[in-house]
Length: 224
Ligand code: ADP
Ligand code: ADP
Image 1 (tube, rainbow, N blue to C red):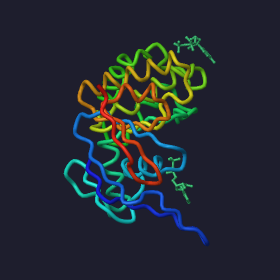
Image 2 (cartoon, helix red, strand yellow; image 1 turned 45 degrees about the horizontal axis):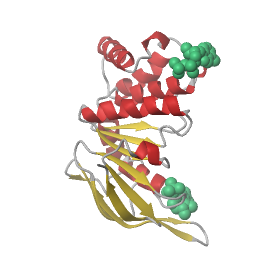
Image 3 (cartoon, rainbow, N blue to C red; image 1 turned 90 degrees about the vertical axis):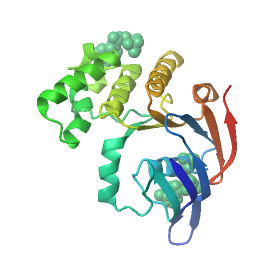
């Protein structure tokens, strides 16, 4: 990821809010970066742009060497579903689908055949130690289990990049640490991770903290 002078301004009838104010930074292939900063500093706006859910007003965003700023929704969606996995604070699983079906969904979107889907999903559920719950519905699982399913869904397409938004925000510390360990394992296997967090504890799992204030980076700390 290489973003330069990224700007995002929200305009309502009478107010203009500068959410990203010429934000620039780089994340190298295979890095694990935490983004921290007070509420309203632009973290969600940034994640939406990095996740190709939204487009900046100006500036450059190189993803895998491709300039994606200015891409239309169709092109962004195409790149997103093949390259990016999302993990959210509130899990965002589909309650009407089983664990297996939730994790299978991204593979259906990318056109993987049923027999191959079964094999891939079972493999991922196994790795996330949630195979024994494959036929349960999200509401029948504990929070820690739901987040393990969400991580499974995020990685099932073997994405280059995982974007995590407060992934432990709804978990107790033991389940939270378990999810952070899963993210660490994925990173060690080569997946790049950008994680927004309020938790200094969770940030210590990363290689580097990017600190934001008012839509800009104010500091970068290297973890030792
Ligand atoms: P954070 O995730 O760090 O809390 P956000 O990216 O959500 O920050 O918000 C950055 C700024 O942009 C805030 O001032 C927020 O109020 C504003 N903002 C976010 N989304 C919108 C929107 N859809 N319309 C107007 N203002 C918004
Ligand atoms: P874990 O430590 O594996 O995350 P918990 O300690 O939170 O699980 O939960 C204890 C056990 O109770 C788990 O096996 C969990 O699946 C089960 N459980 C929790 N809530 C429900 C529920 N609503 N319906 C069925 N089983 C549940």
